[in-house]
Image 1 (cartoon, helix red, strand yellow):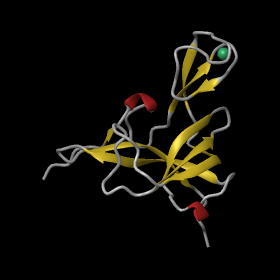
Image 2: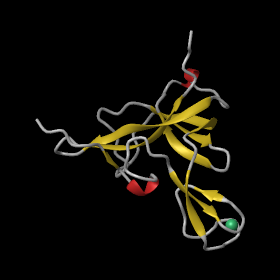
Image 3: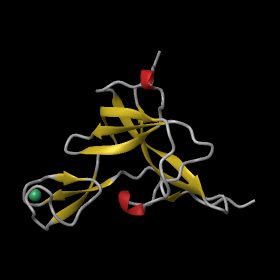
Length: 143
Ligand SMILES: [Zn+2]
């Protein structure tokens, strides 16, 4: 039995290929605007000097919803489809749209701390996990 390392669905979204890699954004050299995903030019001032920047791996939930129907192809999800959370995570200098690991609206609240993680997006024919980023609530209860 062979095990193949999980493969990022889009490697350009991460600073490197390690499993715990931060998201790769870009910061404008002129006005310091941060974008995610990284862009070639600044959406605020138009400057073309954008420097890669590792984004914080923790943030707070800015807004969210629960998607209860399957997205259209090619945005595949694991079968059978299960509802999933999607939200915006405020990372300080930028707000990132992301899948959430939680699909119970009662377990989510605006302003709660969130932690970057990986989820399996789908499996390739040979069983290789294709992963993408997500955010999970980071308020682990330490009773
Ligand atoms: Zn700019």
